[in-house]
Length: 351
Image (cartoon, rainbow, N blue to C red; front, side):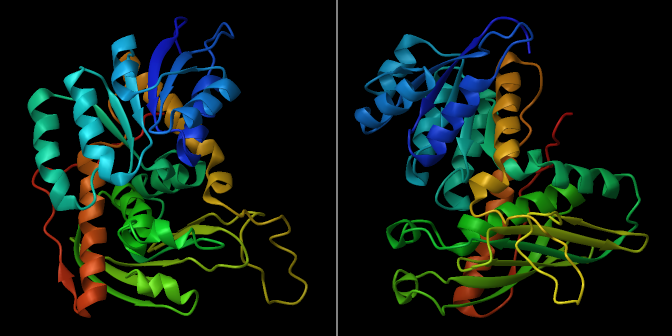
């Protein structure tokens, strides 16, 4: 990083926002000085003030006052329904914007915003932090180098140790949109292929209130890519062994697994096998702590103009279209065709 700090505005001081605040204020220049001057606003000003005091940032009572005070980039860590408006406000101010996924409640609702971003040549980075995880990065490198050959079997797993509050699930859009969309994004990013069909099933054997708000606690989707490769994407809210996020890529030349380390939330049933021996992760914050730090570091580089967005709004909407299709398949019991976004490429992550 260069020597002068950048001014970042953070909107949203909840769990994710507080984590981003800590990661941003921890960044340092080569000389050891803070790389970011952080300003925070939240719908609950006291929440912004508490986080600001903890990390050494400035709290402001509203989004408008935050923008009026002057920032070089904007981080949006608020509820999904507010994302389109806040991205637009950042674009109108001429700012690079980082926004937590998804871009909007549904992919279709996000399409007009994609047109606006393109029209004003805006710079937007969406929060798919797995692109910054060392394991996923290595898997992508191995596949790109041809060391795996062509893929015959792809398995992606996301298992939360316990469900979030039912009030959150009622507005999350469903398990595929909330959890599995991360798997979809990283599969597009690693393979460079588009999903053309989805078939999904789900179940509810935990808290009955999850079903009452229209969600499932466990689900599986079969994805078919445009080259005929198939993948399974599974998710659950009740993985009591720990937070379990893994990816298996099995190819004609070799196979690789992401998440197969001493913290893996799986134990061997084979006699005498002690692997894995570590304590399993319990939350996604813990599992992806380093990836989240690298994600914010990348956004600061985006703000400085050093790199392009490593996960564009188009990337995120392309993944959301697949998650939307999985939700429709779950509701209808039939396979759903996915039409890729016109001109949608897959942004890479610079080293």
